[in-house]
Length: 614
Image (cartoon, rainbow, N blue to C red):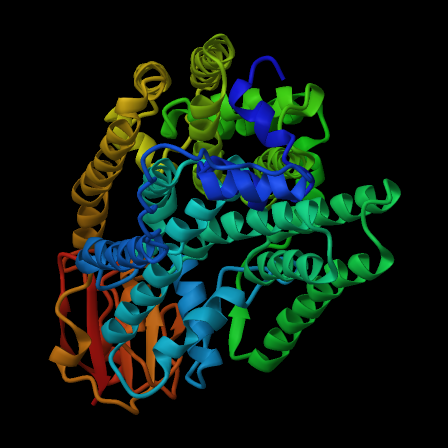
C-alpha cells in the first residue's frame, strides 16, 4: 500500500466498499461526525467550555449533483442529435440496414434482409428501436426517432461514469463530474449514436454492468447478483459480443462459488436472467419468422482454419494488439496507465476486494472482446483483413479512461511515473509493431483495409483519412499522456485539464462529422426522392442488383409499405415499379421499355432509375 497513500485510510473503512469509501472521500469530518464516531467506539467527546461558538454548518445541497447530471444528460442528448442532423439515411451499410429492417418487422411492418447469420443473430437492438417504426410515417422521420433513442441511451454514460468514479474510486464530486464528462463525450462513446448500430448503447451498458459487478462484490446479495445477470443477459440479447461477456460472467460465478464468496441462491440469481434473456432472443427470432431473411455466412471451418496455424495465430495476435493499442491512443494514454495499475492491483492489492474483482473482470473482458472479434471476423469474411477494427473494443474505452483518471488522482508520484512509463512503452512499442505489420503485408503485394468505420477517432486525431499512421498515433498518445500526468498531479489544474479534454472530444467529433460523416452522406444519399418521382403507397417495388448496393438500400428504405426484393435482369411479373441501373451509353444500361415499363426518372450520375409498368 506504499504507493497509494490516499487509499490507505479508505481500505480500512471496511467491507462495505464504495459507499463507505465515498463517505470518507466526501470529507465528512465535522465536529458532529467526530462525536458520532467517538460515541460509537464508546468514547465521549466534550466541547470546550470557553471559546467562540462554532457557526452552524451550511446545509448540504444534496440536489445539486443530481441536477447537474440531469442537465448534462439532456445536453448530451441535444449534442448527439445535433451531430446526427446531417444523416437522413443510413451510412453504415449493411449493419444499419439489417437492424432497421428487423426493427420495422418487429413493429408490424414489412421485413427485409439482414446481413446476420443464424448462430450469431440477435434481436435486442431492433427491439429497442422498433417503436420508431410504429404508425404511418416516412422513413426519414423514423430514422430521426432512432437517433433520439440512441442519444437518450448513449447519454446515460454521464451519470453512470459519475457513479463509477464515486463508488469505485471515491473521487471528489468535482473530479467525478469532470471525469464523467470526458468519458461521456469520448468519440468512442458518442460516435455511433448518429447511426442505427448497436454500438450506440454498448458503452453505457458496460459502465452499468461493471458498476453492478462492484456492488455485488462489495455487498453480496441475490438482488445484486440478479442485476449483474440481467445486464449480462442484455449483452447477449444485443450482440454476439455478448458471448464474451457471458463467458466472463460464467467464469466469475464459478470462481466466486469455488471461493465461497457467494451462496447458491446468488448463483441462481446471477444465472437465471441470462437464460431468460437468451430465450427472449429466440422468441423474437421465432416471431419474425421468414419476414427477415439472412444473408450472412455462419462461422464454421473457416474460423478454425483462419487461426489454427502459426501465421494465423500471428495475424490474430497482431489484430488483438492493434485494438488494444488503439484504446491507449484514443484515451491519451489513460487506458495504459489504468492497465498498469489494474495488473499491479491483482498482485499487490491496495484497493478493496470489490474494486480488485471489478478491474479483473474488465481486464479479461477487454482482451476477450478484442480476441473474440478478431477470430470471428477472420472466419466469416472473405475480404482482406482490416488494418484496424476498433469498433468492438470501443465500448470499454470510457471505463478505462475513468480508471486512468482515478489512478492519477490517487497514487503517489513515483508510482504514477511508473504507470506512465508503461503507457508510453505500450504506445511506442505498439506503433513499431503495427508499422512492421503494415510493411510486411505490403512487401507481399497486399494491403490491409482502412475503412471509415474501423477507427474514426484515430483517423481524426492522426489526420490519417487515407492511411494508417501508427507513429503519429503514438505521438498523440504520448504527448497527451505526459500533459495529463503533469497537469492532474496539480490539484488546482485537475478540473481544468479534464474540462479541456471534453473540449478536445467535442472538437474531434466535429472533425469526424465534417471530414467523414458528411462526405459519406453526400456520396450515398440518392436523389431525387422516390416520392418526388410519383411512387405511390401500395405499389409492389423490386430493385435490380445492378444498382450499387448502397444506393439500392437507401432507395429501398424509402419504400415503407413493402419489402423491396431483388432481381438480376428480367423484372418479376408481380412488379409494379422497378429500380434499375441507368448508365447511358454503357452496355449494362437497363432498358425497361423491352418489358413494358416507362421510366419515371432517376439520377444517371448515381446510375439508377425508377420504372413503372405501363
